[in-house]
Amino acid sequence: MVPRLKEKYKKEIIPEMREKFKYKNVMAVPRIEKVIVNMGVGRAVQDKAELDTAVKELSLIVGQKPIITRSKKSIAGFKLRKNVPIGCKVTLRSHIMYEFLDRLLNIAIPRIRDFRGLQRDSFDKRGNFNFGIKEQTIFPEINLDDVKTTLGMNITVVTTSRTDDEAVALLELFGFPFKKQT
Image (cartoon, rainbow, N blue to C red; front, side):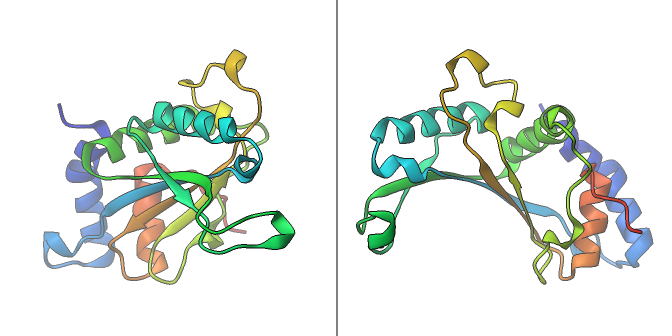
């Protein structure tokens, strides 16, 4: 079964982007290439169970097993040694990516308290979008009774667009709730 957002991209977003930016070829229209979800767990240095909990919760949220990230160098101020597990991340592509974005945009983001929209200045100069979420509890897959500590996550949406204007237009058509420009 084809994900809803992928169908929407093919039927609605491609024609609208071609009309707006005057692309001659369908393949020139930007698309979402991958979504990277990263969860840093600084407390994992002292408590290994924190990292296990983070891995379990991230796999519930995204539907794919995350890899454990390790520290690259020692930092004495943080009591951190080289090659110690300090977080987890997952890269989503294809159907799983579209399903995750659908749940994120339609279920999770509306559950954020006092949400005013995503920042438009969170784009790099190549059309990729980064934003953070402070709590994992906005996702319905997480059982609130099992949560001992709140964990944040960073979500990166990688697009094939060349400029930030193309990327903003693409993500707005997908339904990303950006703050209104004043």
